[in-house]
Length: 339
Image (cartoon, rainbow, N blue to C red; front, side):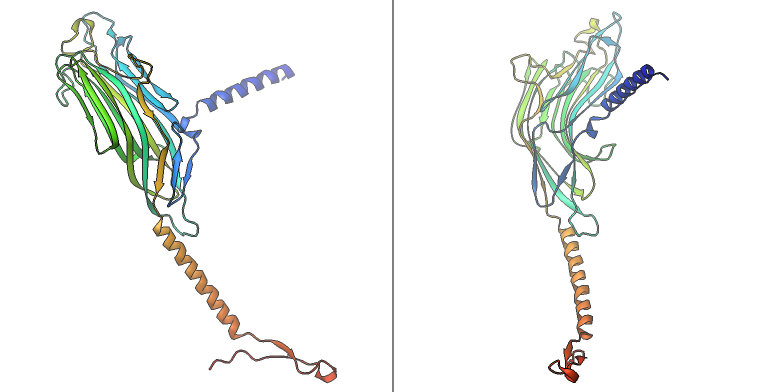
């Protein structure tokens, strides 16, 4: 192989490596937090990996919106139906878009503890949110009857997950908003889930819902020391339309949209915003502390037994005289005599 060919191969190889590493999941580049029991740790707003998902179960329309992602401390989603490519067709649209911040952490085991233990944890995240839900459907879907009508749903979660599959350990859904058409504008913020929240959900002419709020979201749970977990702040949008056809505006289908991305009123951002540092408080690891103390007590007892054995056989060397001539004799004392 010529020197020129070797150089070209090296450039291609390095380029391939850069592309491969660029495609690694975002969570691999996030710095994992090491937490200590009995202490509180803060995480700056937005200091987490950004993960996004888009599930298209059905969509044959054109010009629909499927925006979702993260920017700074903000999560955003924007789903909307498109227009049917074939006039008088009945295209069904079924989408889910998710954007989430993910922060990995583990609680450090107490030094000297023989086994891992379980500790309580409390997470507090200050947030604000704003977005619009639009639906021109005249017939709202009733419960699971998705074969009728259309709806747009937006949910917000704070959760703890574990493992690559991100199995949920505990979660707090602090907002659930839905718009199922002219007769189905509904927002259910959880007053117990968001502390000190300022919540507002207004239905304008029953077609547009302006949803906004702010507060501190709390989540508590139990985690095992030494294991890696994820803290996830998530914004999820689900859109369904039985018939998004252009000829059926306001009929059994409809054109729902959930815009938690682009503010149409002013420059204030739409979306779910992590506004201030998150605090993570880990309770005292009593189990490991007790185990560590028991280990120390066991070691102290062993050391004391060794000292007792040494004391029982302990003697001193001494001279029998002044150290001159025959008086320069070395002798050993007897072992201790116990009464």
